[in-house]
Length: 411
Ligand code: AMP
Ligand code: ZN
Ligand code: ZN
Image (tube, rainbow, N blue to C red; front, side, top):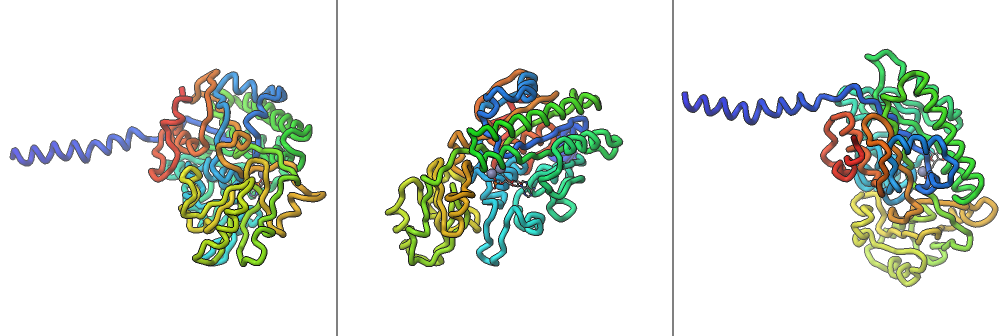
C-alpha cells in the first residue's frame, strides 16, 4: 500500500507535471506579428533624416543600433537565418547560389523549382513552428515561403514577383488582417527589394538609394494609415528588419582569382565578397598558390575556417573559401563583367558579418515591445526565438539563436 502511494507520488511528480507545463504553453492566440524585410537597408540609412514614418515607429517602440547578419551577408542565407534562427551552415542555404557536389544539382534564387524544393532546407521556418502550435500564418513574400509540402509553407503565400506594387502588398496584408477570426493568420511577412536593387546599381551613398529609403518610408506610412483604418494598429506587433547592409565597391578593387590560378583545374562558386573553390585534389597546391597571393582577401581551407564565421560544417561548402576585404571583389573570367565595365555594380554585400557596413536595421513596435527603447546590436539568428516567445510557443531546440540575448526588448 505504502509502495502504491509512493508510485502515485512519482506519477504526479514526473508525469502529471509535464502535462501541466504543456497546458501552460498554449499559444497566446491574441498576439499578432508582422515581420517586414527591407532588403539591403543598411543600419545607418535611418540616420539620414529622410524616414519620418520609421522615426514614428522607433519613437513608440524599439530600435537596435544595428542588426548583425550571418556570414555570408547575402539575401537568401540571411532571410533563412532570420526565419529559422540558424546559421546558414545549419539551415542549408549557404549562398544565393551553390551546388550539391554529390549530385550536381544547383540551388539558385532565380530557379523557382529549386527554391521550392524542401530538400535544400534543413532548418524549420517560423511558419512551420507556428503551424504545429495551431497558429495561422501568411506571407507576402519571404525567401523560401513557397516551399512545396503542406508543412513547409505559410497557410497563405504568394509566388515571388518583384513587380507587385508596394502599396498593394500592404492592402493585401490589411485584407488578411480582416479575415474571419477562425481563419485569420496571426503571423505575417512582407518583403521589399528596392534598397538592395538601387544599392547595387548606384552605391549606398547615391541619391537613388536615398530615393529608395524614402520610398520604403512612404510605404511604411501607408501601412500605419491602413492599420489605423482597420483598427489593428494598436494590437499588431510590427518588426522591421533588413537582411544585410551595403558597401561601395569599385572596378579598382577587383581581383581575378582565375588569373592567379592559371593552369589549375578548379571550380569557382560565387563571386564578389565570397568565393568557394573546389580543387578535387587531396594536396594543398592550389591553397598554397592562393596563400602566396593573399592580398585584400583571406584564404581558408574548409578544415581551418575560423569558428567565428560558422561556415565550415555544411557538406556543400567547398574545400577552399576566400573572403574579400570590405569593398574588394573576387571574380573569375565569367563573373568579371558584373564588376568591371559598363554594367559594373557600385555596391555589394556578402562580407564578414562584423563589418558594420554589412549590418541592417531592427525596429520593433507594438504591445509586446518596450516603448522608446534604444539598444545596441541585435543578432538576426535571435529573431526566431523572439517570435516563439511572443506567441508563447517552444522554439526548436537545435537552433543557434538565443532568447536570452534579445528578450530584454520585450515589455
Ligand atoms: P542579392 O543577390 O543577395 O542581392 O539578392 C537580392 C535579390 O533577391 C533581389 O533582387 C530580389 O528580387 C531577390 N529575391 C528576394 N526574395 C525572393 C524570393 N522569394 N524569390 C526569388 N527571388 C527573391
Ligand atoms: Zn538582400
Ligand atoms: Zn543584394
